[in-house]
Image 1: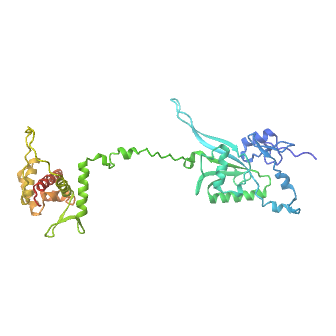
Image 2: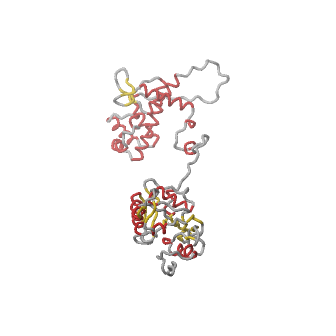
Image 3: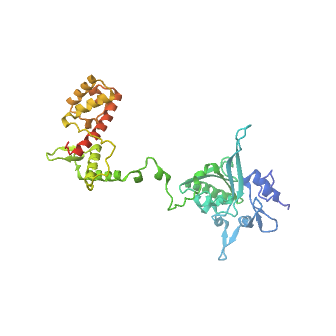
Length: 406
């Protein structure tokens, strides 16, 4: 009886083992999905397709061809029971990535698809492990098991095929979720039952789409480190940017707001007659300054060492409350060079509507409404509101210093 023919490139489906060059070089290069370990004739030494020693021969062929197997208790066990045993498979792993050539003045940068294939160092019991457990084993063939991590829910995607798989190498199945892994392993289990010669599967990873699964080490926190944005940010509050007087003023304002809370208006001062005086930001600032002034001790009396040469700044008294609007409008007209006729007309309309300078600067009073009452242009209305804020702050300060109730 003649020996069975060896496997060559013309009959890759032949079960007989080919030459060492054919099994370790030709088949992994031309048809990696059909690559399988090479056993040195007459020995138990097995090489993978890259020439490294994998281990001793498992003897799967002799076990599969045997009719019965001897159990531990000495009885025979049929091959039907052996079909349920999940054999270890050799995993052929291919990595793909895009490599861009350097751009020069004569040609543009061209991208080239690169790939590298390696075999896992030992057989893997693929059917008894999960997708999350299989991915680091497969990436370990290239030393990438500590670079990428498998997602708990999905990813990274990989393609798997084997000899006789549905669709072949071109129709390889993409595995992304656990349900995809269950479907593929079920097909692989059916293929192992029908083909006793199947001992190698191929897996392909595309590194271009695996950046999201890289393991990134967290930066160690230093107790002396600081965030530049918080330390030097232009829009971040920092107490170092305020003077002690401003900080004291802020504390006094908080005390005033806490002492004069109102259910109806939020924050207001209720006088003896039950009238509510709303505490806006201008009043709170003036009252806070008054609180700080009264908490300071009086300076010790003494004769000045010399007469100051700088002139004493005289301050005019504030206008009467009933004349506040009239004086304000006259001053505004002179400052902004608005004719007296237009100023008097606007003054009459504001007085009929019971407006005062402190009300004109409130945000609830719209510019459109002031334009209808005064007849001023849009820019003049904004100037009026700005002038009203400055006027209110200045006049109320004078009244507070003179003890005038308003």
